[in-house]
Image 1 (spheres, helix red, strand yellow):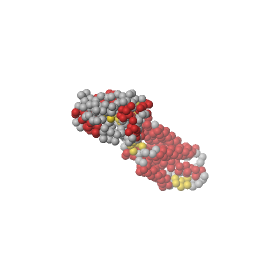
Image 2 (cartoon, helix red, strand yellow):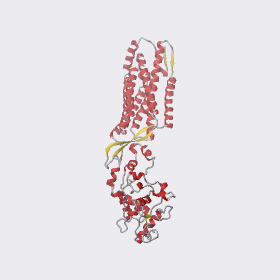
Image 3 (tube, one colour):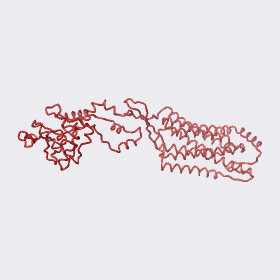
Image 4 (tube, helix red, strand yellow):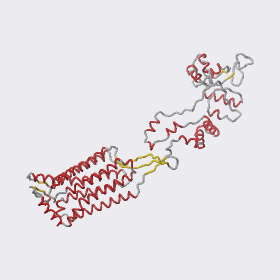
Length: 522
């Protein structure tokens, strides 16, 4: 009945009951051919092998190809846009669309359901007259995985892919899709690969219209923070100079170790102090180096141990002198040996070393990469993403503990410096210690501010500033605490005269003997 006369479509033999033939799809498809033909008085019928006289997709294609081969007229249900219809455009076999009654919302709501279309009762296939209008135009739909947005937006904005935003905003009209089909049809040698090639060719020819769907900040250019600036080399050079100054002070202290001003200050304590300053100076150099996992760990060890060796021996020594002074006031005999002092110093530094070992083992400071999305336009129509590197652990608690420890050291040194203000001048370092503590507190606050506001600074600038602050801290400490002792050691007569004046000006009487490392009071 598709191309040849049958009893059903022979209108000469059966003028009142004859029907034309229409190829319609299976009932599972969204088709309304039967109610449209019935209510619009179009006397056609599908005689396919399906349960409702329908044809499956492959059979429909065969019927269409047969009609083209025999140059026979054909009436069938299809959809647009589609490659099958596109392949016959601009040829003698081009198919023409038949327009029916205009679709309305009432018509859409009155369509028969899939259950009615597949019912065994033919009366269910007809449905209502209100549902017999033409097919409504549909916008092309996009299928997007439900978790795609979550995966995309869980990524930091600077590294986020524009894929989701592009997919949700891009629109292709039916006409544009037909253009893709035309390209596909012109290359129809391999249906699978040619489809992809057709899309790529169409995209290449329509880049201007597609670029409007790209978010404003794309494409992005990565811009890495330079770590070879002049100020970096200045910071490293200053750190190296400070290390030389520490060595020079060490040599001079060793040279004048027999002078009273050095003996009263306890040479071993001074050596420990200088060792700490040397570590801090080395840490200043490492701070200026481009961050890496080894350098991040090393600089934390150097600075933390450096300040421990710098302040803890000084605090222990002043605490011992204060204890001796207090015992003398109470007329009590007290004996303090170097072993006691070194044991206390070793215990505190040992605890700090254990803390650093645990920190390094559990959550070591390592190089962290941070991307910052800027508003600065790049050369390809997007914006720049600045990439910087810094040292940090996964948890900030380690740095908080270190900061609290440094604060406690400074507070203890301040209290002890105040308590020692009335001690005999030979041993009284309250003014120098107070100035050292004050300076170290200022530099410590500056380092803390840089740590908390590092996100607003270029990483290389932050590193250089931290390095310079550490170097200045050591320089100030050397100038305030060590240089005056060295000057006095070179002219011991000044120290002797000052000591005589001091002895006569103090009403309390006690003696301190640094000989053989023993300190006694009466």
